[in-house]
Length: 529
Image (cartoon, rainbow, N blue to C red):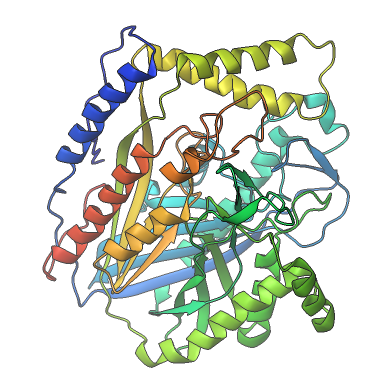
């Protein structure tokens, strides 16, 4: 495995804790990181004449009812299935004759997040059934539905699960179902073709509301005289990949857009959210066997919930006879339909496929002594209660994480390691990150990428908890306090990586993509991981 580190780890020894020291020290570290990331090791060029093989499969990963749901401050017990949860798998291989050039397996999961350890455990689970495939080139990505099962036994207080399916019991079921689909997709790969296109659909909206005093609040009220504007840009692009068999029949579609599937959050039902509705519409046109992989592009500050025009949007939904998730699914499907006939004019079989896997260290968000004191007090207050209720467990976990990271930082651990996948498929670049990455960073990658089209996937391939990665503008719009929702998504409570880290991520992503485009086409061995 090629491991690319941006800087050596800082020697572990205690040091001062004040912001003025860390500010200067961090500036030096970041400057060093950027100096070290001006080049990327050379990559051998992909063959322009490699034959593409593809396979696809879908697995039902809907839990047995009742099910404990994640994605909210408290556990919810679902006794109804609004729509099934699925894992959708795309297997790709490029060959020159009988020689494999490169390979990839992408898995889109109707889950909230891929919790730490799950991808690694799944790779081990499926490896014995995939001889000849490097499982390090398989990655999982979550759609971020907030109506999916809890995946960590200690995510909430265990007694709150009641008679629901336990997370420890759901995981073996999940692994078995996903493995079955992965094996079917890989074993079923056959000569195919690919096309790509770009459309648009209004699905996500900036969810950070800014007020007259400059502070911002996630999903804050806008019918307020002090409301001034939403904080950032909204990205409505829809990136599309279509995969065809040798008869030019569409067999799989991969769709990425800046919108997390959380329209049904808070409801006590199992739901794949708008991706289910989009898949149903696509299958009505292309057949029930169509495999649809839904991905979220960077959308840390963007979600499907409305901040304004709520009544007008609701009226249009009623006139169409659609629920909100059905309407969003309709928009995604219509964007695909709009693109499909156009991209069908340029379907290709002899496209280069190169799949690189990089492990990158980013600088952590430095926690000050004052922030540590706040976190310790909140944890102590929760611990002093005779009985935890409401948000207590969720709050204790988040503020406890701040305390743990502070202690680790005092011992010299100030980096965050991530796994990043970067692929070239024809003229398209595909790049992953594990975060809820703010839209601005996705825009930066899109703008600087040399590829004709750049397909970004967040909430993918995590090695550890990832959470939000905000912009400096968002961080400046509030502060960390004992109130859990103060500037939520832009404080140390949910930012393991601060605003310095994503610039390194952007640079490294763009550099890795550029290396794939600089390499001249020609015969090559499969790139090493």
